[in-house]
Length: 298
Length: 258
Image 1 (tube, one colour):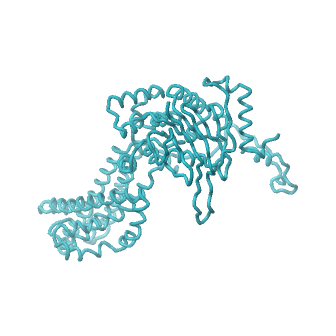
Image 2: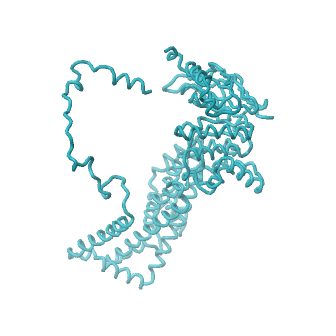
Image 3: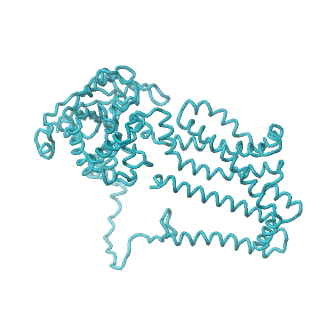
């Protein structure tokens, strides 16, 4: 391998070659105080590591900036349509005293938990099969490719006709609105299991179901958790659609009824609660990933 | 003693694709590995040597011909033929001990016997202190030792090694080669190993098959006359260099006369 390179270097360059024509740079002795290279700060370095304390500080700063910016914006405008953080807090307290808030949070969270849970189970089963078997992939590619482009939100009224007005249509809407993302993304995760791991299991005597259970599935766990985190936002989106169709309780329904009452502080408080629920579930899923999949970060 | 591996007229043709024509990867390969023997296949990349190993392991099928172990035809993968790949074949979420036990659990070894076998292999491999670690915490050489231990655990008749030391640095590679010789003298397992490192093949094998590329054919069979005891004396033996040069010349005929 090294031989052609050596010959190239040794062969005399043709006359007039740009490289040889350039006068050799005179050796400039750098003074002893000189430095080489461009210094990089930890903060500005791409993919550089930063101090954990600094990291925490920056996270807090981000939150402070968000609330501060909101305060600044709301404090300057005299409009009652944009409440300040404090007014929002008070609006939230009023809602809590009104007695419906906890029930709303429970109702909405329950719908998302059941619907998204079902969607994940379907997504894991079908996704792992699609990612593992070319035959299943070939069989499902066109139906899924077609079905996933039907906007799930447009199915709401149909689900009301089919499933009544109770919980079933709402849960169905959450399932349909997230399941295709889950299937396709988990299929990608499962297809990413290195072939060597699968082959090694075969040569140790494993059958294909064992390979699925003991190789493909465990290797996919961190990826599946990541997919679950990403698509959870879509589940909440579908929840809002479902509660606007027909509901007796729920956060999205409450926002709509507060809108009719022009209670902007209350509406804001509910939006913040959506954000907090989302952030908490995100933290929980991240912790789950750390607990189950420390091997994947090594 | 069991573990006689024979390859009879194995041909592998890859079907035509849009970009390439029909590719004959292997063309009528005949070879054999006797029980307890260590045989290497050397060849340039693209000579189909890994394909042949996969066919012997049952991971790929031959277009024509057959591979037999003790006269029985290979139709699929099985724990009687342990395989070790170049790298990245350990289960990163399992500990070293659980990786080694993987095949034993499949074969339903009773727990006490299984634990004893794992302990025995950890000892042979010098990995006892690492039993509870995950592969990600090990060096490349240690990982390959785990992979070899995992393949050896269910007591295979034949061990198939696909460039197992190809990704290791020179020093680790040397240590692993001596280690493999040691393991083989202790277990008397039949070993067929693929490598592109000619010196490695001469150092380890009793015989070397030299493959030519496109289509892959057995160009020559070279008998290595050194006894079971190998070491620096073998590498300094003038015959060692002669054999290495002879095989290198077979691999690169145009480069031969200097």
